[in-house]
Image (tube, rainbow, N blue to C red; front, side):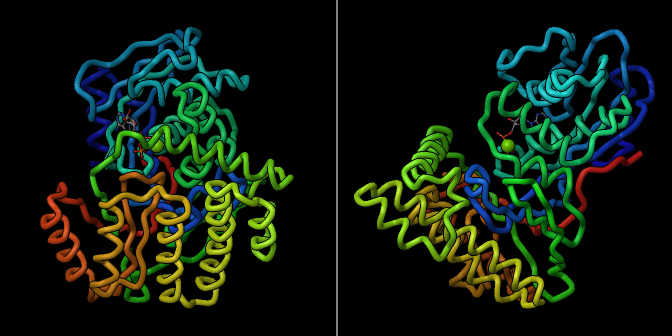
Length: 384
Ligand code: ADP
Ligand code: MG
């Protein structure tokens, strides 16, 4: 699915050429899970999978939205009537972006939008951020708003938190807006400072596989909220602004101070050790010791499974099977309770591992997983 196809879809729908076509990718998080709302470190990279949007300005206050991936006609809204949490459907994401821009004082007087995506929705690969960021970038350029990438990411997060009503961190939108090809993005979620870390696996004979388990266990939203609240409780009990402020060297002392708060202790241990794992992965990659990040990824999975307790049988089966079949490392990625896992492997082992995972899923009676290779790709951009 390319720019031309989406351009043609726009013309068929709205009867004129779009002013431009933009793309924004989905992402996977290499390491740094559930650290973003604790003001810690994350390290996503962009996928080759993108949401492509053809867009034209309007001056009459009308916002028309259409997705090739959703059945039905274009949805027509008025920009001056957009109201947070008024829309339960997919249009809340793009409408929320327009709302957030206008609420921040930017002039957006309407638009026609037609889009299509190759980012699997609901797989933990951030199709929602891709959708928000592509719309934000198009509006920024068409209306000459002059916003920086990180500012667009902020506004997209606000759209998702306030307009859609989903309490997510800043990672997804920043990844989609700011990643560079051949790199992972080290993001400090406290001050939003960024560093591009070279991550070109193919050049070193390795591959990173994404295994979409195609399950999403129903209780995941509630559990996310609970983890978040308990992390805040941990920070309050320890007298810090956020768990990011507990240094790895202070972890044992901090755990002791938490006494019999067993649940909070586990969560604190995950968050503090996970920030340390991000640091370790950065050091290894910068030293050119890429293979050595494998065991760090696997450690991260064990921490998410046993301490943070957000894995599920499907994700554990991917990780266990991949490791048993020779993977360098593997872990769940994203919010948990389903979604996707990542597997770092030597190029020569990819087929064996893929087959083993597929067979293990069949033997367990699980839905067949979707396995694909993730090449660290470019962030949001204009296509035509
Ligand atoms: P994820 O971001 O992990 O894919 P979310 O639940 O956050 O999962 O976002 C998925 C939602 O985003 C979909 O249910 C849909 O409302 C919206 N969405 C994503 N991509 C598209 C698309 N191409 N067309 C229409 N809606 C989309
Ligand atoms: Mg999402």
